[in-house]
Image (cartoon, rainbow, N blue to C red; front, side, top):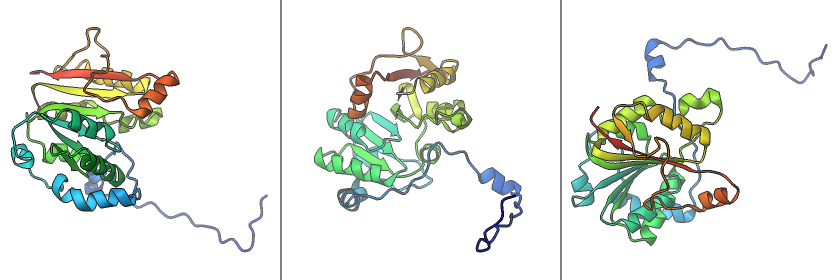
Length: 249
């Protein structure tokens, strides 16, 4: 028998309080872990200086993209842009398109705004909020020309697969936001997640896989090659791109 040290007070078990039906309904499976990262001085400066102009506060009302960007142009939405390098480079290289990025982590938003200043971007806006809520409440139906989800959290453990953002219900919501003929572009460096994405999207009547072989496409020039990706390729890691066209279901 292991004896308790006299200075240690044993913990008593607390009785679990059952959730009422309303609390159960409000609990959601998140596709991200909310981490309160600290902003660097440069990121904080960019947030203070540029978010009032390039940032969009979350409100439960539809966006008017022509008012937001001051013109009518193709709209590209990127979900979970990380530190924003790829998104900012696309906005720099495709100035005839307008880009909206959604990212829940503050340092990523700050880093993206640093690049927006460096590249002198006027065709980029960012939202610092949960993408699922932004899509549900803010994105008008049939308003987007392209949706990008690049390297989302793979949630590689099988018991966590339900947290992956690419699920049938979410892809149905994305389809409603795409114009007819709009593109859903996915990329991942986890083969199992790539297979999961195909299992979700290939059977959906709302989408047409643009791969000639029904699976993957070569990386299009519109998606910048990141340093992380180059490093992974040098180590023999794969990257899988998938492009699906929105069609009438």
